[in-house]
Image 1: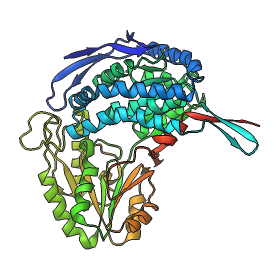
Image 2: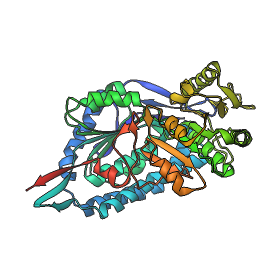
Image 3: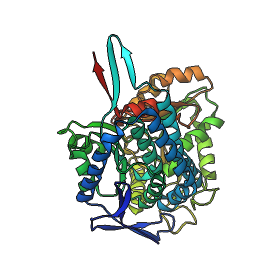
Image 4: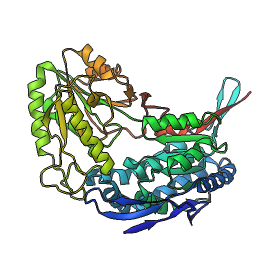
Amino acid sequence: MWTINQAYIDGKFVTVSGKETIEIFNPATEQLIGTVTLASRADARAAIASAKRAQSMLAKTSKAERIEMLKRLESAVLKRTQQIQDATVEEYGAPLSRARWISQYASQSFAIAAKVLESYDLTRQIGGATVIMEPVGVAALIAPWNSTAGTICSKLASAIAAGCASIIKPSELSPLETQVVAEALHEAALPPGVFNILLGRGADVGDELSISPDVAKISFTGSTATGKLIARAGLDTMKRVSLALSGKSASLVLDDADLSQAIPLALQAAFMNNGQACVAGTRLFVPRSRWEEAAALVTATVAKLRVGDPKDPATDIGPLFNRTQHERVQGFIRRGIEEGATVIAGGEGQPQGLKKGYFVKPTVFANVNSTMAIAREEIFGPVLSILIYDDLEEAIRLANDSIYGLQAYVFSSNAERARLVAARLEAGTVLVNGIRPELVAPFGGRKQSGVGREFGVFGMEAFLEAKTIA
């Protein structure tokens, strides 16, 4: 059992002034594993002041100095890879394979940013003018519970590459992962105030970051509803805002696809991270001519998925994050049935043999139409809706019939045809015949899936502003 009551401010761990304490439970066992005391608005102001002091120094650093900082961060986080993995499994039930990927990506983020910065021209000539790319200023980095370590490190890497001091606010529901990452980052021995980390509620800590005139930039990953609140709150001080928000990603299986390859990949896209991923491909579009073949493969593949202990390497799907999330997903499964969809795999209730833990049966609905809630709303659990189309034009129209546009997937035996379809999909990223992202390419959403881009050059430029001297 662990107890966390500190924030990381001005280069050291300090006891927070907040009084609210919340309990954290292991989602696989429902056992209490720790408590965290949340930071207050006063703590947020202290973190902002620390970052403001560091900003004037950081803005003057050379490219070489920032690259050195990034390399030190990479080394420090790399040493904690196993601890990050273990915390990710314990705190929110990520399957071991997913937790391993997240823990490795955390350190890779700094290596990627260093390489991007090394080849980037911070000063360039455009016509008769000199254009200088300057840091935007103090940045608030807000990370979600479903990818805490990776998101913290990815955002921080881009901010430091650009020369921005930061205040990091991970979800208050992920204190263990945050503590492990904070301890790792501390070991890099960066100048005090370059980054500050605190856990607190959105209503006080988050609000303070959003309204403070000393915060120039907000980079937020989370729900669309919360992203809108942050954008509105930052409007008075004209904050630069990057928002990576909700998704309802489409997976298009074209009529020439090899289903033996496409269906397992589509199911992995739907159920990744226990279905708790903004990029999850939770709408699967299948041609009517191949429906029966696809349905048989779906049911057979889902039947082989192992739901259970996330520490077991053989586990495919672990528990949902907490009781609230479990009840929400069960509610969506009931709603799908009430709306007239047909369950062809999974359904309500606990998976067989699992009496404790926030587990959900991986569930697949057929006979779904695009007006149903299960086809329109982000469920954030292992629930997949299959929709039938008659021709390619209908498939593209249905896939684009969403308020979201974060990611999409296309499966076809003809890569060029798949790319032509991908070009017509309203999504920030489209993956063709695969589900692994390109981590140096821009990532972000269209429509209500977000504003701006992260990763690679685009991620760093989100923390830079151009100054023209002519």
